[in-house]
Length: 414
Image (cartoon, rainbow, N blue to C red; front, side, top):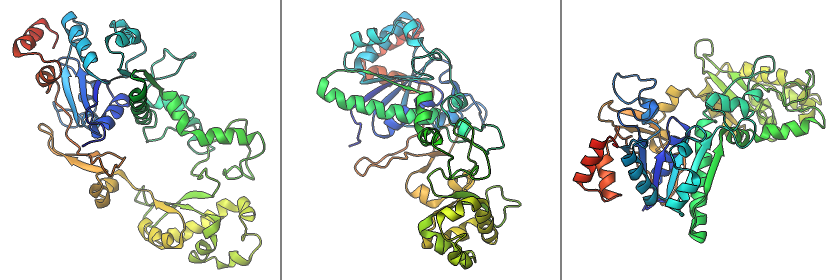
């Protein structure tokens, strides 16, 4: 049995934030019915295609384990079918622009009337306030949620991260909200609204920077590279590669860095392991020197310390350095490229990276479920073709016969 067996999701999402959420629920066993526009489908089916006339990786990697139906919700017959789907589902998920479902005639009040037990979950750009009617994309969310202002080097401009903390991050938040609402429904018998704003989701992931904003009012942030010789303004600054956790950390070059853009290692000079780190890089002299042998004494010389560490790491590959430092309990990690991650056997073994066969594009790699449940194993199934399950869903879920389905198609509802 899968964790969410018996839960039926009406998936009205598109692009990334919503599909991330519903794919996660599908991995856990929910029956996710993806509703798409006839003839067009989710816009990402055709975006960033690497093979002509087949579903893009953008789409396939966000829509595993789902069933696809095509439905024209502007058509009266289509609205009738949509109403019956609402009656038959436990959750409706959407990430339309503000007010889109209301304009279709399906406000939250109307949806409650149709099915009082349904969970209505939405991704929005912003919560109530001056920006609530604005559209948001990934990098906009990173900028408005505090990610960009705190990312990058002090001397450079704000930088967005390659991790999709706005879209996929908010999708993960929404999935938690949905399963929490389903759990509460077991007691109350009632559905409820679940909303996640992308600005809120990004800010939640930036909470340590909000922590630092408050600390800044009481003095300089000593773990930031601006201390002690730089200056602090009124807001949490960009900190380069500083660890942010109170222990000095930085990315240092490793052997081959001249030609390999990822030949780097992140090293944390944790106080508890500093003596072992100093010895291995050839600086045992630091241990008896009051200018180096306490964390407080080292703070003004963090740049110099990592320069010395880097002189040692440049004689090793990033993997060799990691193999030496880990047994010494020195926290460190290589900068792994997407190529290295895609080829890592251990990630294949755990199902974190999965190879999937697709009827039109062939085999491709995707990220599997990052959450592992011991009693609910995940099988990653390919994404659906556009409308692949329309007849199947209408028969199984709504009990429509071939004649009724054919009539709906003639009417233009499907």
